[in-house]
Image 1 (cartoon, rainbow, N blue to C red):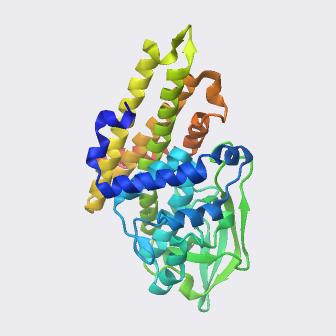
Image 2 (image 1 turned 90 degrees about the vertical axis):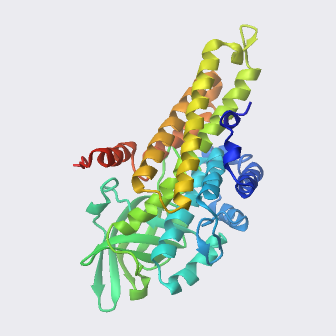
Image 3 (image 1 turned 180 degrees about the horizontal axis):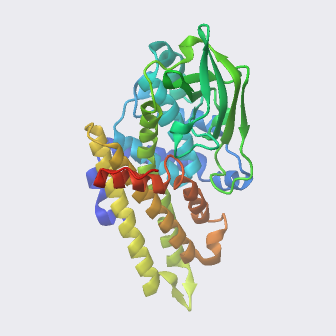
Amino acid sequence: MHPSALFALDGLLTDEERDIREAVRQVCDREIRPHVAGWFEAGELPARELARTLGSVGVLGMHLDGYGCAGLGAVAYGLACLELEAADSGLRSLVSVQGSLAMYAIWKYGSEEQKQEWLPAMAAGERIGCFGLTEPDFGSDPGGMRTTARRDGSDWVLSGTKMWITNGSIADVAVVWARTEDGVRGFLVPAGTPGFAAHDVKHKVSLRASVTSELVLDGVRLPAEAMLPGARGLSGPLGCLNEARFGIVFGAMGAALDCLETALEYAASREVFARPLASYQLTQAKLADMTLELGKGLLLAVHLGRLKERGEITPEQVSAGKLNNVREALDIARTCRTLLGASGVTLEYPVIRHAVNLESVLTYEGTSEIHALVVGKALTGLPAFH
């Protein structure tokens, strides 16, 4: 039995949603899985080529309306994230940052001119975006950002540094958030703008098949129309992060599912003391426990997706979903590693790659501690962030 069949998950999905899941899975099987272990080992990703491939099947910004975007529902988008992360978390990160951070920021807060200029090409994968919020000293506390934007005549001049930026060095445009006299505002910074530079982060052990960069803004001069007119204050970037976190709720379950499928296949074929590993009670207990957590996480993800489609989802619910599903996915990956024994630490199997990737997913777009405090505040009405 397939792990998801125990929960009759497909019965909760529409025909269109199942078709989208299958289409993304086929792209991953054809374009990603044969190569991803090598990309991970080499610490590289052919991101531009992959962006065009993913754009051609409508994955980039698929949950947005208009401007070349598919306008699909939240569950369909979530299932795409699940299949992408089942291939590799770095691939889902590329798509999340492109569609739910950079494109969403322009779609939600941009002017009509900004939308027309950037969104169709980004949906097609012809242009890539990144999202500059986190700074070297301000991750969980974005309100402390030091990046500034000051007026100089009709222009804006930006100075500061952003860190841990997915897609940064390959992006055609960076959505950069900066402190102004009027609060936090967002700006579109095209690649090649004088004073703007992006440097890759080296020596990563996690998310190696992903581009991670530092952005440096040294007196970057932008015209007035570079500012996103609809975003004012931290609610702008936090709204974007909520979109991306939703994708992680599904995506993390994709990594967990790939680990569990690998462990099931391995346990059935690996003989220990002349019997299949799968025939031992401790092995079956591990498999049963992991399947239960996977199933609960998938059901939670679909439920949150339906809430999102009805416009009823809250940030606290997204935090609960990310907190639970990433935490459980990481535990599943680690447990699957034990079933594979020494084979579990090689890139011949995807388990250790998923496990180390999930260490990053546990931290980015809100650490598990921050999401626990968000849930705690919702329960008690008392903030405990300081």
